[in-house]
Length: 65
Image 1 (tube, rainbow, N blue to C red):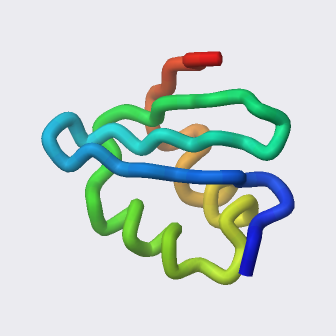
Image 2 (tube, rainbow, N blue to C red):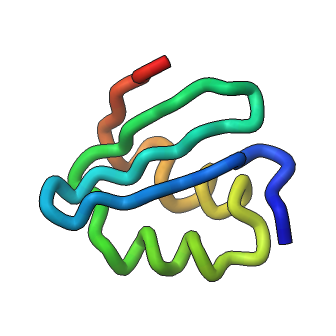
């Protein structure tokens, strides 16, 4: 099911970086995210809810755009 908040996400296992591209066009890299968290988000019914509950406030991030 498409998300109304998250347009795309990708994960770099080498750097443990989760990149979130929002529908608004903003891009954030969340750092030191375990692959299990990425996989759980991928399988989540609501990407936005998962992001707010398990990622924001738990991992440092960099705004890319």
